[in-house]
Figure (cartoon, rainbow, N blue to C red):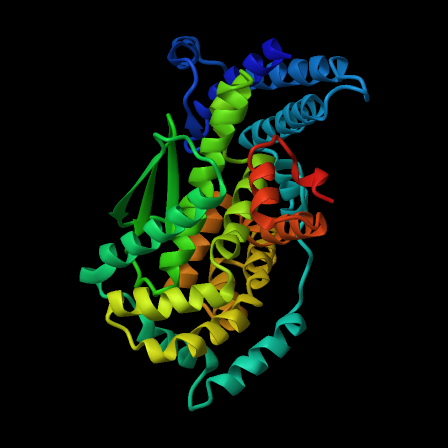
Length: 400
């Protein structure tokens, strides 16, 4: 199967020449990149090669009695190749509806919600944040009391990252040389991004275009770093690429089922690293003081955020309606403001994200829910089950 894996990697690199941002990370042989650039393939050629790879993978299916990891490897390569083919079709002009696109690229379809599904949560928040004016304005005013001052941002993030790293290293064996650094950037459609660089190194970029609330410190430290994206990529590199020689894990195509696992584990990993009670104590004693905020409001702040988190699927619905052509960009912004309680600037940033990443938005919430159901159904230690999942080639459809 190693030959098929090499063909897959070269195919992903070839598609990346047509799709800026498609190759999220690559740390395989430099010569393969040079080959792709020296002899670029047309989209038609990549489509033909992807079809041939899919046929050969089908012919190479291992026996049902083969080692589970080998069967998972074959399933992974097969489904990832199907996603490559779907992306090539999209780049060639095919237009898929939101649900068909997410199934083709990410191996999952998010549930559909209506306005009524969010009404009860909005009513509860209305009770929590009583006062004059629209609920979104009251919510925004409430949250504004918990913004990290720009001059304190690095100190707060450093404390959060150091704590999440310590907790993760106590429970998951990481390569001794792993490292993780932070940069603050502007003019991005996302709030944070992990750029995995290979060799167990990551760079996280934090977007400072909009105010950053204190809860984002732990969220980004865990999601982008420990035990999220950085740990996920480092363990795949260590256990699958280096130890087993599975070269397909030298490349990460962003628009693929791998992203649902990556984003789902990164979001679920926040609570793995910091269960609620322990997080509140750390926020109260360390992060709120580091940010110069009133720590007496910690519990109330997180109670409100827990309610607001139940509106997360409103973002999917805005994207579904927008991509399916039922609303325009302005309508998507309005939907996010009304049903997701986004401030208008944040809603506009989110629509820019949807313009770029489309159905990728499902990976954060349905991905988290699928990962949570899978790990918690196994009944073991969450850290152990989490580490097993992020060290394997398991697909979203195999989580059920």
